[in-house]
Image 1 (cartoon, rainbow, N blue to C red):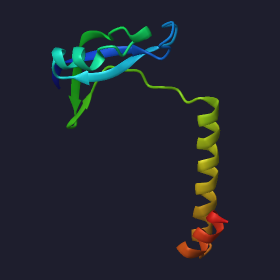
Image 2 (cartoon, rainbow, N blue to C red; image 1 turned 135 degrees about the vertical axis):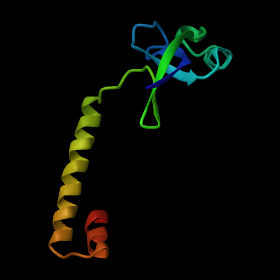
Image 3 (cartoon, rainbow, N blue to C red; image 1 turned 120 degrees about the vertical axis):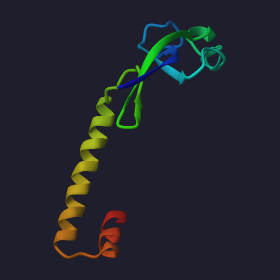
Length: 108
């Protein structure tokens, strides 16, 4: 498995007091680039702190350190509504409706 160093400029989800979560602002090949892109982008306009991390290549894709954001309640509700809508549209296709018919139903 191929690996290589990357430089991560970290910021915070709460730029006022820094009580939020740290997350990657940018992931760079060069430390200088991370420092430049992180300048003034952290809590109260301070510079983002930069760390050296390891990126891992798996099946031609690079995986880097970071945090997977959990959906908010609003996001989860939108995802559920979208999944329900997609299921209904699929049922309409299976029932023989054309794309034009479905478009009319979806747009109202």
